[in-house]
Image 1 (cartoon, rainbow, N blue to C red):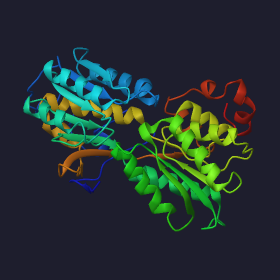
Image 2: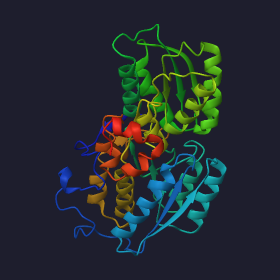
Image 3: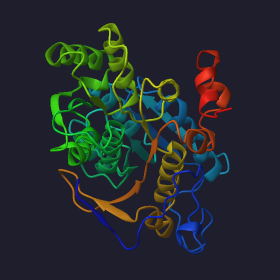
Amino acid sequence: MNTRIRRTALCVAVAATSLSLASCGVLNVSGDSSSASPTKGNDVTIGLLLPETANTRYEDFDYPIIKQQVSSLTKDQGHVAYANAGQNADKQATQMQKMIDDKVDIILLDAVDSHAIAGEVKKAKDAGIPVIAYDRLAEGPIDAYISFDNELVGEVQGRSLLDALGSDAGTSDKIVMMNGSPTDPNAKQFKAGALSELKGKVTIARSFDTKDWDPKNAESNMSDAIKAIGKGNIAGVYSANDGMAGGIVKAMEDAGISHLPPLTGQDAELAAVQRIVSGEQYMSVYKSYPQEAQAAAQMAVAKVQGKDIEFDALTQDTVDSPTNKEIPAQLVTVTALTRKNIKSTVVADGIYKVSQICTSKYASECAAIGLK
C-alpha cells in the first residue's frame, strides 16, 4: 500500500476512546454543522459487513461500538444493518448484494477477500451506495478507507521480537514467521513491516501464510516448523495475531517445549493479555478499536448526510489499492502491549477490567507485575 499524507497530518491519540475533531485542529466541525448541505436526515441505515468471528474483536468491539456511535450521531434515529460472513467470501458477497437490494444508505465493508468483493463494490457504486472499506482495503471503487497503520503494526511486532531476543541476537538465531491469510491485504502489510525489521538480523527458518487466520492451521504449521527446526533451536516466533499465537503456544507445549521462546501477537485479545501476564506470549499490538469504530461511524454518517467538511477532516490521508488511487483514508497508530503497560493501555481505555484479566489462575503473576 502506498500511503501519502493529504493536507495535514492525522491527529491520533491511541489511548483515546472517543474522537474529537476539535483536538485535531479542525475548527467548528460537528454533527450539527450548519455549513453542510445534508442529503439525508438522521433516519440513515448503515450497512456493516464484518468478516469473521474467530477474532473476538468484531463481535465484542467493532459492531457494538459502531452501533452505539451511529445511534448517538443520529439522535437514536439511525440504524445499523449488520452481517458477519464467518470467513466465507461467497457468503459476504451475498450479504452485500442483499444490502444493495435493501437500498441501505452506505456500506462499511470489512472484506473477507479484498479482491473477490470488488464486483459487489462496483454494484453498490452503480446503485448510488457509497462504500467505506473498514479495517481491510477492499478493491473496487470504494469512497474511503479507515484502518490502522498496518505496516507499522508489523514493524512494531518485529522490533519487539528483536528486543525480546536481546542485544546479542544475530543470524544464528532462528525464528518462525506465522503470517496471516493470503486473501487479506492487511496480512501482506503486516508481513512487509515485520520483514523490514527482521530481515538480515535473524534467520527466518520457516515462514507460513496461514489460511483464514485459523488458529488450528497456525498450530499445524508450528508443529511442522518444530519438527523441521528442532524444538530446542527456535529463538522466537513472529505471530501476526493473537488467535494464531494461541495455536502456536499449544503446538509448542504439545511438543514438550517447557521454556517458550518470545512470541508476538496482535489485537490484545483477553486470552493473549493473560498469556502476556503469565509469560507465554511476549507482546501483542494494541489497536484502539473504539477509536477506529467511532471514526468509521462518523465517516459513514457524515458521507450520507453530505457533510463534506467533516468527512474531509476525518480522511486526511490517502492510500492506493490495486484498482484505485488516492483513496481518502484515516490511518490510526498502534501501541506495543507488554507486561509493562497493560494497566495504561487496555485497562485505562476500558477494554478490560483488571478482574477480567487477573482471574485466580493469573493472580500471582498479576501481583508480581503490580496489576491489581
